[in-house]
Each structure stands twice: as C-alpha cells, then as structure tokens.
Amino acid sequence: MDRLVSVDHERAHITVQAGMTLASLSIFAAEHGLTLPSLGSISAQTVAGLISTGTHGTGLGHGGIAERVVGLKLVSATGEVIAIDERTPDLLHAARLSLGLLEILVEISFACVPAFSLELTVAPATLDDALSDLPKHLEADHFGFWWFPHIDIVALRSSRRGTFDATPPPGRWTDWRTNHWIAGYRYGAELLAAGSNPRLVARANGRLFGDLFAGPCTIAGPSHDVFGVTAHLRHDVIEYAVPIERAAEAIRALQRLLNRGRHICHAPIDVRFTAADTSWLSPAYQRRSCWIGLMIYRPYGRELPWSALFHEIDDLFASMEGRPH
Image (cartoon, rainbow, N blue to C red):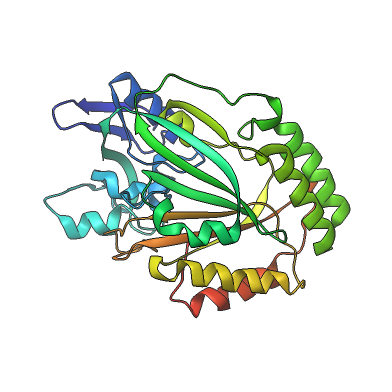
C-alpha cells in the first residue's frame, strides 16, 4: 500500500496509496516538479498516519498537512469502497483528520504546489527577545523556535522561499540536523547522569545549545530536505495548540511553571505557528494557533519521570483554551 497512483499535472494533484511514507511522497512529488507547501520535522510516517493525527509544520500562511488533502478512498467494515472529494466537503473535513476512527484509508490525493527551495537561518536569542519581536518574526514564510528550558535561550528558525543553491551546514559542530554524537549520544549520557535534577538538566541543555546554536547558521536546499530534522533520542512528548493571540501569555506561564524547579524538561521545547484548519478534529480548527511541544527523552532506554509535568501542562493550557495534539 505504498505506491504512486497518479499525478494530475494540470491541477498539481498527486494520489498515493495510504501506506506510503511522507519521505517517499516528497521524492515522487519532486520528480514531477511538485511539493507540499509546508511539512513537519519528521518524514518517516505513513501519509495515512500523518494526516489522521494532524501533523503540521510552521508558518502562519499554512495549515496542517491534512488541509492539502483533496480526495480520499476508504474501505468500510463491510468492504465497500467509499470515494470522498471536494464535492462532499463535510465528509472530507471528517475523513482527512479522523484519528483513525472513520473506516480504513487506502488512497489519498494531495493538492501540491510547484517545487521550491528554502533558505533557513537559525540564530541564537533570548526567550524575551523572541517574544517581544514575535509579530515581526511571524512575517517570515516559515517561523518557529526551539526554546531550551531552564536556561531560557532559544534558537530562532526563519525560512524564506526562493531559488537557492543547496548549502549544507558549515561544519560538524553546527550540523544540528544530523549530529548524532552531540545531540544524541553525549546529550543522552548527560541527561542520564542528571536524572531528575533540574539544575543538572539545565547545565546539559546549556552545553547542547552552546555546541549547536552558539552562532547564526544558514542552510538552503529543496524544501522537503530543509524542513526535515533528525530525531536523535526516543522521547515522551506533549503538545498543545493555543490561540495565536495567547502565544506569549502561554509561553510565559509555562516558563514560570518550569522555573519553580519541581520538574525537569529536556531541550528543546518546540514552538511553531500555523493558520486555521477546516478539518473538524484539528486542534487548529477555525483558529490560528501557536503549538507548544515539550519532550522528556529516554536516554539509553531509561524512562525519566514525565507524568507529573505533563498533567500540570494539561491544566495550564486548558485554562488558556489550549487543545491537545
């Protein structure tokens, strides 16, 4: 269930079987001069899984990936094949982000755009600077930031579209996308040694930031390559979408919670921004959203305590109209 079904060049639609991974979809689309306008960081999921769970990227001009779905084929429990497209908008809004509760997906059609390149600049800043300049930052085609908890510094990520020659990161120490030694093995060992001590975790977070994001770094290339980021460690994660108007308020409240010193939080906290969605079960349904995602890693297979922190985050963001992803 991972084959290319068809490409409609006139409408820039590409139809694939539901078991294809996002990585493969991006390659097939690129071969036909097409791409999706926004992607998340990870590309190993099947397209059925990523639309059904509301996978999203960042950029206020773009909704979640499910918003690009213009047609579906489902198989019902009785074996009936059900075709859904834009002529049945209610069914489309329900089926393309169903959390796996509405029949079985077998084919998905995406509305693509002409392939484009991205130039991504990653630069260090304080959390205060990131929030005070947020309206200006959000003018970028794609903007988000990685917040390093307990030390309150951030790596700003701002992308612009255009025609750029492929430019890799300048060297091993700043290759934050693929540096397994720093972002995986060494950081994992430091977290394992730190255990549940917020002060030691803060020290590990600071060292990771200093090695990978101490200075500005620019990379460029095909959009689907630049969007991608390698996940170096297994982790437990919680993410909430809050109204864009409450983004700074929510982040400040989370900062106060973490600064009380009762919980550890690993780096980075991923902050992203998207347009309003039309899919009924999307956390961004009918409102522009700020997405805030926290993670607790499992260094070398050891599970560190996350439940108490995540429950406090549930209560905090629920008080701010947050919707869990």
